[in-house]
Image (cartoon, rainbow, N blue to C red; front, side, top):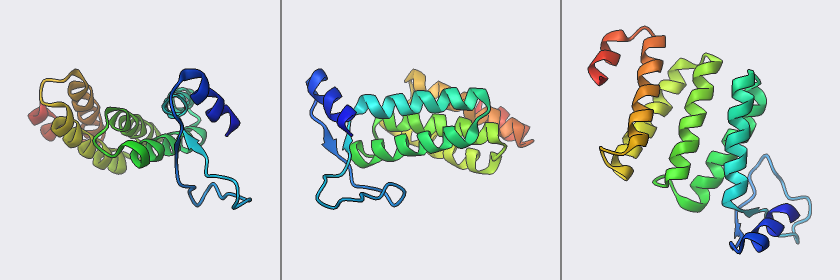
Length: 148
């Protein structure tokens, strides 16, 4: 918490309070809820990606869920950073073997990126490729070919 505040002051970016989640109970109700800083959420997302690449899906999932929730709470579901974190979560689900949930999450992310960023944005192509990979992994090759 102090690190978040220190980063906020040093970077000149105001810390935005985020409501405590059930998994992070505040033992002292007089202490303010943890502050949000975009660099902290970005770091959690990057660290989750490293854990995913190392095959440590449990640690990766904890961090990516925190990052996704923080971005959603502060910026909403149309934010590019939120959508990137969602995409990273989809990759983790795919690597874990949870192809059904990866498919659902990737479809939502693809739809939201198309609406938010427009049809010509490079991030849309990245989401499309991730969705095609999941469809192929699920054995839905015909559906994947239609997306090409």
